[in-house]
Length: 116
Image (cartoon, rainbow, N blue to C red; front, side, top):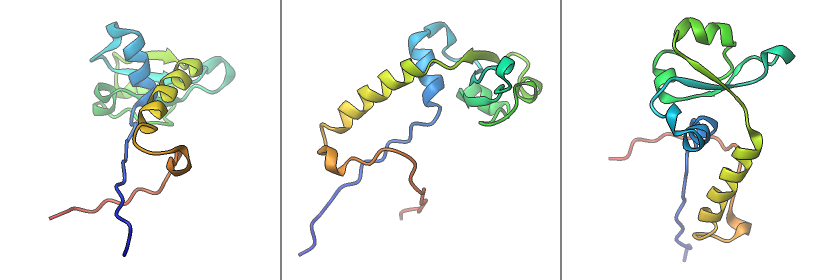
């Protein structure tokens, strides 16, 4: 008999932006983009909030182009220590539902299927 299993999928879209908004509530609801350092020639959007995405801002977009799509965009520098901490909290929640040998973290292929 086949073993029944449940798959828990958590799409952490806008993760960096969500962390920034949790840490800085004044950014909530505003068009923000977490970005690289333009001085080091890494001035691209790493992630954007939903208001910025609605204006056409996309991951990987150069900052100058993001600003053309969204004049009011707020550029926020990346704080990787913050994202590591928040992802650790998320992992702790996942581990309440599965043991670490079954927890897969990282990029996986996305299969979209419309259920009846």
